[in-house]
Each structure stands twice: as structure tokens, then as C-alpha cells.
Image (cartoon, rainbow, N blue to C red):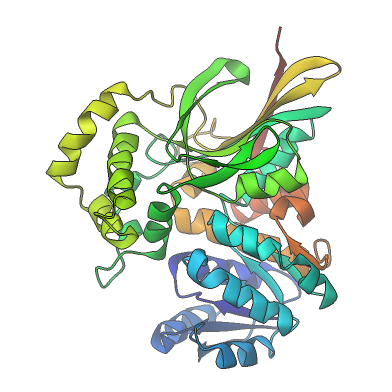
Length: 409
């Protein structure tokens, strides 16, 4: 297959492009970006691989050029964000040019819209997988792994780390929030969008509006206890369709009280119009004393993550007639040098590697099912985690994730 790495010079796309040559069945990689110099630079770095690589200039807002480029390849890895601006445009163009599609969309709003193109994709014989990164992506596959242990599923929770052990401190990561030119990154703007306004998650088995940054207290197997905070994300949207929980499904941040309190200060100022998503991202990269002082009362009231794992999915329900809890989480019990720890500490790798591994299942036909799907609907989780173990160069006998469960008395 000929692969278009769209937006690949970005951090996450670069990792996906570097991982792609390890995937069998790729005939050519085309690196595409609106910055042709950046695309050529990445293509030169990839030239040492066994797969032919070339670079082209593409602006996704130029529909004619975008469709012409898509028509010349078999599959596109779309890492152009934020997805609430560009995701639907690129997906529709891919479907109509009969180009298979994967992305790392982590905005819930376009996820709803993209899933509505399912019939169109099936009619065109196109396989589109949306949200094949870390969260969503790995989180979805952990969620279905946990839910598979239950006879009936009541609640599903997915969670990712912000500033706890196992994750880089996002509040101090200027490289994460600010680009080389000093402007906010797409990831930063996305985050501001997803903890402001209202978000959609699952309540009583139905999609419903929620207030972001709401605390959710969890009791998990192994005596783990702690509080996570809601944030807008695609997992509840897609797990509502696939796992079909009878109760709730929410995505949570595992985050310290001070950080969530500061985010809540930004949320209130975004909602009142005092900040835009872009200016809020700048404020997060360089926190101000003024908003820091405003956050103190909320920080003192907020509860922390306790003993929650930094990255996990949990499901509650029934098993053999009894209430049951299941926890699926990445294995962080190894030494500090374990590649899983470094994976969680690097957003680009944690997102870009799963994208390439998901692509491998589309290329060989395992997941090449026409339609628009979430990862958990088409990606084989056991094979995915085996592949992830291999790419991280871990011992094949060491599981990359653990499943723990307990019945509730």
C-alpha cells in the first residue's frame, strides 16, 4: 500500500512515520504538510528505511489539492489537528476518494460527526478508524479488555495522566504547549477546548451533557482509591456504541489538586469569554500569579488521585450474578528504565506508535472493515498489545498490561 502521512512533520506524525517502515506491506510513504520544508526534512530522515519516501506540499483547507493527493494513495494517516477544525474535512475527502483512513482524533465533537459518515464509508468500501492513539486508542482497547470479563457492564471509565508519576508534568512542558514560533500547539488548544463549556459522556446508558472537571471518586481492584476529573474525549462516545454500558462512561484525568484547580480557573475564564482556547493555552504554558492565587481555594478543596494507576480503563457490572470490578492498566511495576514508563512520559510516542500499529491491522486486512469505526470496534487488542510490546523491545513474556478484578461483597 502507498501511505500518505498527512501532517507528519508534527511530533506525533513524525513518530508514526518513523514506526511505519516496520509495518509489512507498505510500498511507499508520502510525507505531506503545508510546510514543504518540514516535510522534506522528515522525508530525508526516513530515507534510510527500506521503504521509498517522498515529500509533498498539502494544505488541508485546499479541498481540490487534498483530494488529488488522497486519490493517489491507498491509506492516509491523518495527524492534522485540532480535529474539531479539520478532522471531518479530511475524513470526508478520504472516503470520497476511496482512501483508507486512520487518525488520532481526541476531540469528542468531531468524533460524533465522523461516526455519522459510517454509511458513506461502507458504500465506498473505505475503512476509517478514528482515535487510534493513546487516549483514545490504547484506552479504548484496555476498556474492551476489562469489559469482556463481565456478563453485564454498568460503568466504564478511561483515564490518562497529567502530572502524576508515569507522566511528564504537562504544566511545565513548554514544548508540549508552545510550537517553535511561540504559538500554542494543536494539542494545547485541544485541551483547552475539552475542559471548557460542556462535554458529552454517558449517563444512565445515554449520551448526556456533563460539566468538565467534575470529580469522580473510584474504588478499583487491589485496594486502589482516588479521584479523577472529567474531561471531554471520544472514549465515552464510542464505548456507548461498542460496550453499551447501562450506567456511566466518562473519560478522566489523573491529576493533582493544584493542577485541576488551575485548569478550573482557566475553564471559568474561557466560558466567560475572558480567554480564548489559544490564550488559555499560553496561560497554561506560562502560569500567571493572578490566576494561581485564584486557584488556591479550589486546590485546597480538591481531592487527589490517591493510588489510582496513571493510565487505565475500569469497568463495573456483574459476573456470575455478583457485582464485579475489573481494572486493565499498563504495567508500570517494572524498573524506571522499562520502556512502558518512557512511553507514558512522551505524548508523541504514546500517540504516534499506536497509530502506526493500528495501520498494520488495516493493511493486512485484520481490521479492514468498511465504515467509520472506533479502535475497539475493529482493532484486535491482543495482537495490538503484542505488537506494542515488540516495538518497545520488551521481553515477549512480560505482559505490557495487567488485568485485575474482584467481586464486591
